[in-house]
Length: 239
Image (tube, one colour):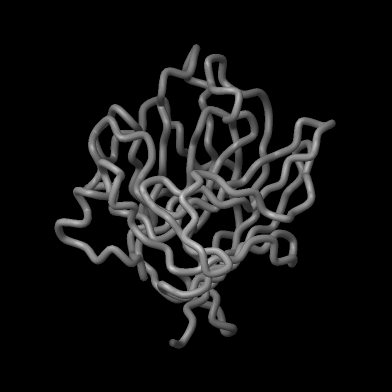
């Protein structure tokens, strides 16, 4: 990526997906059916406009390098209509996965990489619906000194309705504290991200990896609702 004087490095160049690897459930690594992930007006966009209905084409696009101690920042927004057949929970739903397994290590039909998911949600115009939540595909975390095994935990964020841009930052300290920050406000904090020994895919990773997660890939998610990402940047932390 391109580095700036203040330490921020741009991960997405706005022109192509050369530094990124696509993995769609049911497809081999680097297959991008219907161009679900694409560059659009300098943004990294998720679009299902080449499909008539959603049929489990959950997708993730991975940056080429692993990271451990860093701040990631980006702007996201949801746009348009969800693809017919997408799950109710997937309405205006995407995610930024951190400490993720590699796309190459996923099963062909695996829906989500084993990772820590910073879940991003858009409101429906009426009901409260926080964003910057935590989901844990194949993983667990520690909150307030207790191991939490719930799959998703809501943040303390406000609700962001409509197609507005929202600024997300994730401050990651290896296997120690991780913060989710929405529009400058810390909305979620947890520690000790780790593999879940009861999970099928995590069990496979445990054969060659530590249980405690201190690094991994970053990826962006496609779950049936169109969305856009821009200003995707990382700042490495000295630790």
